[in-house]
Image 1: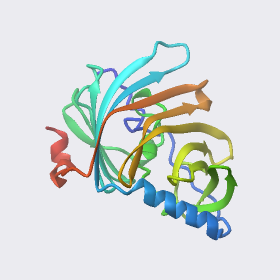
Image 2: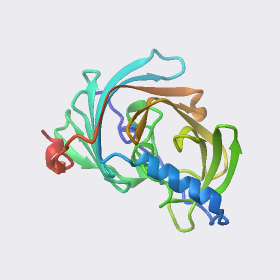
Image 3: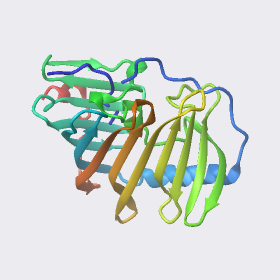
Image 4: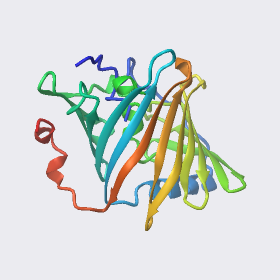
Length: 251
């Protein structure tokens, strides 16, 4: 398997340690309320199963096509690559934002993913393990400011004092009627805009909504982008807890 193990796998591994947010933001009750609504809207499902077709486009290189299936239950996530052939069977288990494991068929071993690698793009993609693990933001970030723009809201998040976070600032564009993000801008600790994620074509099953298309552009790498297109989505179907175990990674 031709793999540099650069990232999370990369739904997104870090060369350097996660950046430490410096200082706390002033309280903004409306912004805090918007953050709470967004976190709640993103976590309505008890379980989810998704299958993705992925295109990864690095500048000056042919596009690469990948396949992935993902099981989600609470904050636990099991991801398995289904394509291409040299990545098929590679699995990533996320038990929490700080507890992640990878199974590499070429080595036949389960390895814990070091915390200092979780902010790198996995398997050459622009998404990192930290990006994939982020299902709630309020535990790590403080809502700094909120503004309205027609059918959207603009929400800025800053790291909470004492929290180690992969980004120095996040700027969300939130669709008001769903309370869910259509765009996320990622900034490093120096305030540089490093990545932009778009989430579009939302589909809903009752109160549970998910974007059918996700795209992440890395502005530090000449516009390198990765796009996920959802081809299968199942909500609230039974998923055994046994699936989310290190033992299951090797199956």
